[in-house]
Image (tube, rainbow, N blue to C red; front, side):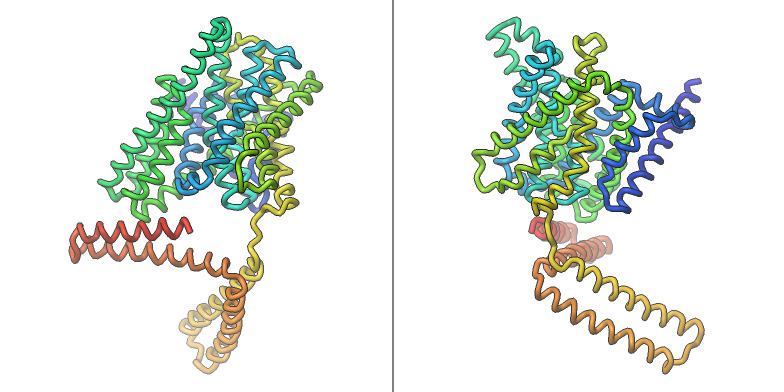
Length: 524
């Protein structure tokens, strides 16, 4: 019976993956943000009675299943993937706006939403601040996917990623304190305030220590291996291990996995990973993140339809308004003292404070007897639905209107020339192949080849002119070429070492030199 149940669960999981992959593929084909499409389709599946999908809906919308899949199964992978590829130098260069938003902005939003819910929605103090914590999280599962799909300037993308990663950890800590300790702290008066502050510091600090220690230990471990499948396994153990270990001692698992992944990707990547390993680890987590994101958003759409949102629409409208106002005050206030930060970017950060699967998973984790649970659930789900669909669909137009999306001059012309060049080169290759196979004579083939070669010469001249007019486009091409050339250098040294033509010590020095060059090239 147990085997049958497991078999059935696997079938439902595969069906979910197939639906998510199909919707994602179609969205990418039409160059639309796939998270929004998945949420909408998931909601439609939830609303309509489709017999073949009913078992899937029943399985996914169980609160325990949803909570486990989002928080324990997918969240460490998604946070780890984002932090792994975020260069520390970029974080350091943008530390002021990231710290201001992730800490100052989150606390401001938490307090505004919490007090508003207490005074205007007649929530208990405990339920009000639980709602405040839920609505202060700019869920990285949502916001990173949306912004990657629409494209923004590099510095703005780094600020958005940095805020999402650290803000998420802080919001989860505030949620746990509000849900399980707030009432006892309030009853204890000033002593309770001190206890609450100490609990906050303990949870965050312990998460930092666990993540930092494991990230450093696994980074050192990579020095002793040059085996990318094994090092990918190390990264999986690190992300899930740091998360689960921190949670087991009531620390912040989110902060632990973010810090561990940052150290592993930066320090570990520098001292212990070959270019081949870096490339394969990044590729592995790209695939894992795409799969996880696709499933998460489809599940959010299915989960939202479980709640009757029509009963309390005046409260829902008011909650959406409160959350939007709180986010605006949080963003503009926290960034007001940060110099050299474009004002237009603040508008994107404000509207891009999306809520998502993390908020839903957290509210579902509340005990069944939590006072005000249903009201928090209804308002939380409503804000998430508005955030993902309305804000998510309007981010791209807003970016275009404000002129924030990077404009790569000459990119369309370059793609057109490149396409024609590739066509003509492939045509010449085919002529040589057919000539050899069908014994076509030289005079015949030469006439056609000459025609194509003249076209190729013209295209190359046009490309040279384009690169002269657009140095950035030329630098982008050079950067790609340098990277591939350095990978070839690495493989050449590896071959010499393998055949014992050079010593391991010399090879190690060469590897370090090549790795430094690759990192320098990527940071340019």
